[in-house]
Image (cartoon, rainbow, N blue to C red; front, side, top):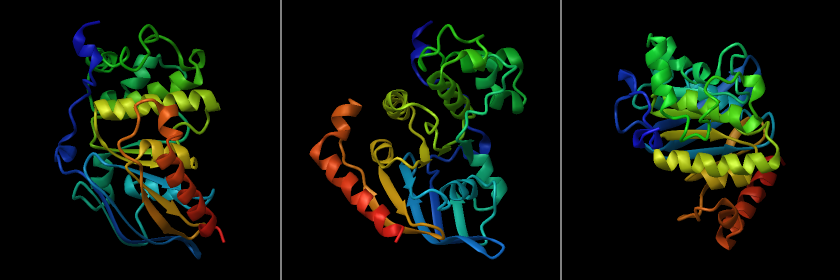
Length: 271
């Protein structure tokens, strides 16, 4: 495979996502399901190509918040802007959503799963496979293009799912606990891999995770949320610059100190 395959030669963004200033802004956000208040009040923002991590106790509304950002739900009150658009259709047009499960279609080969977003946009099968296929070597998937999901390891399935998300060509990635189902070793490997992927092809990212260490390693800023109804307990800046090697980064004294602050904020949020 040629040099072009070493780069993130993804599909061009859709017209709704072309603005280089694409960012996420949340102001006075509240959300309820009937009488159940899920989100009390949130004000958050991340700049273009920033990575915002969201951590909090189980059931606090992290996934709900991500769905609101991605335009899959409309908030009860407040405003969410993604790249300047604030209605659900505009947000959805600018966001590529990656759910907790990889959601690969078992009857499709890996390359066809990766190319699914392109096919849904009307790109012909051969062209869609060609665009997605350029990334398989860079994603450590070369040789597995025709492999069905059931024959892939958990880490490889997640790479295919992320490749599919990236190939959509949208400026904002909404990632909902992308590595939650993986074992500890594979998860650590995937965190290092994703950090490199985002360095190679910067996007605005909102990452939901229950793992404080993962959030601080992958994000620029981390918002610690309280138990439901969710509110921001504390916002933390991740240590920078971070070591390229994940193990070196997460054992650095500055990183450890910020992680302890985040854990203390989590405990305050559940009291």
